[in-house]
Length: 117
Image (cartoon, rainbow, N blue to C red; front, side, top):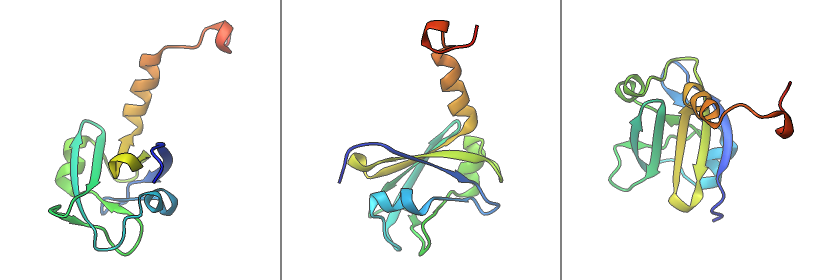
């Protein structure tokens, strides 16, 4: 399994489902696999774990429980950046607010780096 991070996008539905067939397929997660979900502001991380409380469904998506969505500030209709970490057998869903914050922290491009005058 490659160690490169793979990225994709998803949209949170009303039941907390988010996913992308290609992204989930990178990890080789199968229906019935147990997952542990953890979260912080704007980020949910899923890891395969035999003792996990969440079960991977037949379709390639992740269901984030309502309490965890609320704690992480994820709402129905939110687009998320999905990042798969094959070397860690994990997937993270980042809210666009977190992505925006990271980009702003990086700073504006200077003119020499292709920024506008």
